[in-house]
Image: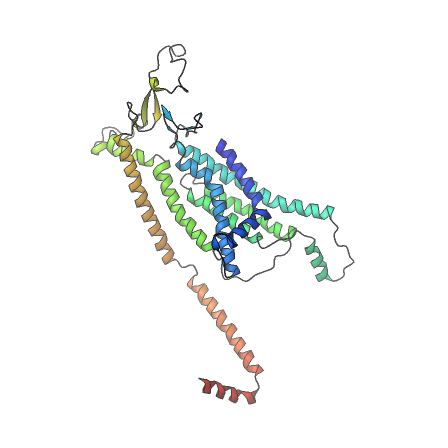
Length: 405
């Protein structure tokens, strides 16, 4: 519950920082001056700013999810030796059914509540600014008969935009793409919810750009620039993240190890229909109540409330009951997780690069069409150039060119 509240605050914090000129100025200063950076061109400066801004937002939004997926319940020690903050407060435990439940809830909050809040804030802020400017500022009122000038005056009364407006749209899509790919193994509905959100948000963005903001100044660009490399990096992180979720966070590997090594069907025996019978009992370790710490020692050992004395409890882990050291089954599962992670990542990344090699970024038909348009444009320019040159100068020009060659 605490992590969900933190994520809601982070989503509002991200929306606020996205339009904060102080943050942009600070990051621009870091990009330009710190660490002895001296970009030679404005494009290199924009690329450095994009990478730093995306990295900042990525770790801001993913810190709680990474903690739940890979650290929650694994760094808090064990009974009789818990890790405590200031020697007083214990760290939070996973859900009794496993950390996948906590990760599922967190991803559901991200893909539902966070996207709704972000979309509402993204449209509400320009709308409120437009209403404020409309009713509390003087708007030019002239008897304009020229339609072009009248359009300019109406466009001037809208909210102003800057060079970061389109940048924030790219940043939002990159963060959403990260959420829908890196932890999709824990929340398979993420791509569907992202699609539904984009269907609504594309209309909100169109209305915002047409009715609430001034017309942007177009700038020619060959492609989306550095964002291509960022998306490729997210694709690699998605393979690594999903591999870690399946191998570490979920119970997929412990179930396989128990099924083929420790369960009733181990070593090829099919004595029962359910080969996972007894798995829950096998995954629990024993803790004797006599080893309770002084801070957690119970006043009632069960004799008064239950009618019998409780001598031990069970908890999710693979430890011995005497010295609480890891058992051989724990190291067996650890080796299986490591082997699965290495195999999974190499296979999936190989498939990714093979598919990228077979499927070009620009289809051959589109590339041929662009080359044809370029050829036709150059032909027209050559004809116009030849038409402008007088006939009496053509031999001299040709003779000069041939002599030069």
